[in-house]
Amino acid sequence: MFKVNYSKMQNKSQNPQQIFISEEEKTINWEIVQKQFDKTFGREVYNSWLKDVSLIKEFNDYIILGVPTRFFRDWIVSRYLDKILELIKGLKKSIIRIEFKIVEDAKSPDIENLKADAIKNITEIKDSVLNYNRLNPNLTFENFVQGKSNEIALSYSKRVCEDISRYNPLYIYGGVGLGKTHLLNAIGLKLQENNKVMFISAERFMYHFIKSIKKNDMVNFKDFFRKSSIFIIDDIQFIRGKESLQEEFFHTFNSLLDKGSQIIISADRPPTKLDRVQERIKSRLSGGLIVDIDTPDFELKKSILNKKIHELEAQFQENIKINEEIIDFMARESKTNVRELLGVLNRVIAFSRIHKQLLTIDECKKILKDVLNKARVVTVDKIQNIVSRYYDITLTEMLSQRRSRPLARPRQIAMYLSKKMTTRSLPEIGRRFANRDHTTVIHAVKTISKLSESDEEMKKNLLQIKDILLEE
Ligand code: ADP
Ligand code: MG
Image (cartoon, rainbow, N blue to C red; front, side, top):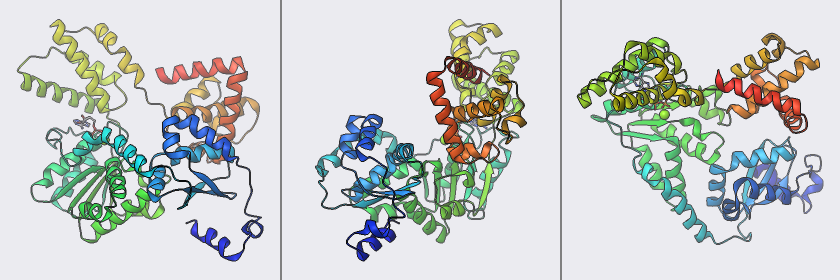
């Protein structure tokens, strides 16, 4: 990576700045960056990890930072890199990547202490990590309810179990709470009898990765993950922006495919939409079969509710007093995902158990008010629609290239809200606004941020729009 430019500079001249003067442009004040690190990450993280990061070199589109060890680098890359890049972009927007150089003799803080610190941080998640390969016996194919939104994903999940390596990798994607982990788990349970199954989330994969780096034990790490014949990895989007993790993942992936292991992957988006993931990985991920799970329709939601109620009745030998009307109400009102739907059901059941009576719709509304209001998903589409409506312009006008103030302002507001209220990246937002460049989005975000501080009218409008977004 950085080696190319950097070593060239070092070899050719005592005074490298002069040769590369056209590439270089010094505008970043490192002291200011450090102050922002402190503010953004908090004192503890700053002192442990970021205080000793130095700015080695600055180019137009990237910078090289110095860190004391590889361990340091990997730790920072895996945890803080996204945020660091964002901060630095805030000061110099042309920067698109950050590279690291290990500065061996840099004033390095007490590494042993830091390692101890790292372990301390890790132990907090250790309990869940210990479960890395434990499949949940309740998440089976039998209790996965089929509907229009998931039937393809379900059918291929089953086929993979019968015809190992035919669809390799099988890539299942969809929003949160739609049943991805359930399906992955069901596949694992099914194949466990005759195969060596490894089931792990990308996040835990990373935990093992960091731990092995720290213990200087990469050989075991590689071995451990490469000996499975079925490798199931959940929430792969987690590797976005984490370069060293991607590197390791790529090698694990290749060696598994080479020896004919079946790989099953889940993610919250299709491979092509995994920004900040290396192209070669995306292409690997797309090399098998890609299926998606969509939000459940009314029918599926009803079936899931009925099935759950029956299961609970059987399990607790009780008669749950929930009538058809209430089931319809829950299925209609819970709009986000299956996880929320089940949460809604649990509340209603808890209430009816206490009161031992049939609930009325009004009671139901009351019990569910906060659940149903808080869980609204805000998407870029929704923002565009609602902002257009609020300012009485059409969606076509919102997305058009016309720049008159009555159109440009709402457009900027919609971009601003997309950045603030969704997890979409700047380029993704740009694309959704008729393929605009991400710099246009940055400009919009800045403009509206400023206005929202100085302009009372703007402040009020933004609040109202946010309210509508969260209510509808
Ligand atoms: P994801 O991994 O996509 O975020 P999960 O697999 O964790 O979602 O699903 C959330 C909850 O909804 C789990 O309790 C799961 O068992 C349940 N669930 C999702 N889809 C279905 C379905 N089609 N039938 C039965 N339960 C489902
Ligand atoms: Mg999941």
